[in-house]
Length: 282
Image 1 (tube, helix red, strand yellow):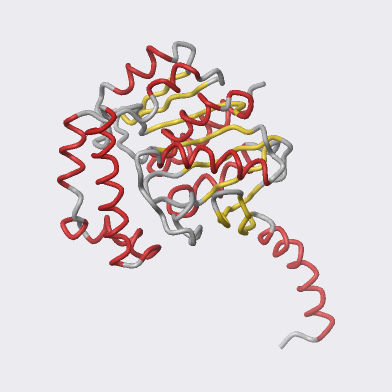
Image 2: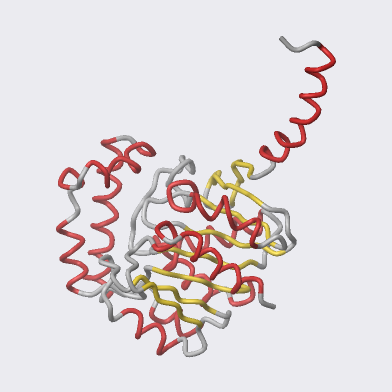
């Protein structure tokens, strides 16, 4: 047993460490006009701002754990904000609704969130759906976006991609390993419902809008852009990368030859260094 004075010395040595651990990140809800109370994870304390935008049905922790843990050290001049879009993760209520404009609605909600945080100028790190939303946002709100980095995203949906989505609409056909992370967030039944609704909405966009997510907005992006790509990504058609690069000729590009859809998770250390170098540049 330690004597009282010894306990006091141990506690005094441990307290700074514990305090530092607690300050790594904070979680809270922010009231956002038109979008409800949105859950965010914040880390770092720099003057510049970086918003992490997750993929379909994704949230801060399901999609960006390595970035939340590592980027504050790599970007000490940034505050990192990872959000759960309306109806995703812990941003419930509201109940998620998938209409033809759900990407556009997320873009508007993200802008309102950053204004509510008094961070109206920010950079974006967007994966998959988050990259689509990021392109929309950067195209429509030029003055709000400092820099944009995206991966796993396309500006439109083609026929082959629609067929691939329809083939995986029923999550009961997925492997348990693929289902379980989202089932932990939403529950078994709600996840299956949400995913089916997302697939149906994407297919409706293909039928009613020729698959157009953000073709026009891509041509309106003015922010410096970084496109990253897993060459073996099975979730998007290969044609999207040259399409984007042709319309964003000044964009930086980096390819992971063996990478698939989740390069930021599979190659987290390399990925984080690449995007941090991009965001650090003035």
